[in-house]
Length: 331
Image (cartoon, rainbow, N blue to C red):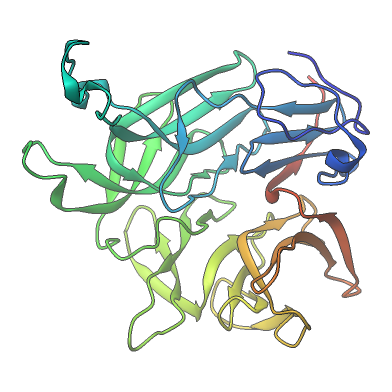
């Protein structure tokens, strides 16, 4: 694995890093003493340089664009992937006319990439695997799934849509009941003490913008704290950030549901802008990275908000989204 200087960032899909053009380098950014994860191409930026994580051979990104995540120590990345399903792809003789028409079928997996071994490990059994969220100790990954059916005539098992918590050491998965309507392609987030998950339940007639809900991991109790999408728990546990008002506003709220306040509102910005994808906290809980998209134009940027001053700085233009931000420590 070869690292580049921070001035030579690149976005081409490759298994190793290569020098980037000036235009490419403007699409990524680094922060002093930090590791940042960006995607659709999975790129890790740290003071040691820039690494693009190679996608597994033949893979596609998960359906509905679930969000990838980086572990708190920066040593692992988890991502929903679609891999060729060999069990579903029947072989045929080259002489058969329908061979050329045969389409590859895919299975959904949760992939976990190790920076140390430079390898992927896959966890299977899903028709769908959603956005990933590492636990604070880095030993578990939570994500929403739809499980495959054991009946070959059925695509998925009835009542199989649920959040699962994957133990990375044992490979065992624990399902959390009553989570069928959790949005799988939106951000979910752990509390710093590992007791709670913040998730988004789907919008309904009663709650048109979706609902931010806290789930206690052991008791499985649920508590709604706001209306919106993509909840992101702050590193110290004081706040939960989320997107509201049809993703035109970034909000903060305390975990008990009090103190709600707006951080940034772009509803009146000319050109038609929305927030989308992950809401990313700085390790010091003093800044947020927000991904912005021009819905009636070609632009999509990453903005940084200083929570003390309200100052907004554009960190990248027309580049990949920001997905994670963890402290950097040399080992």
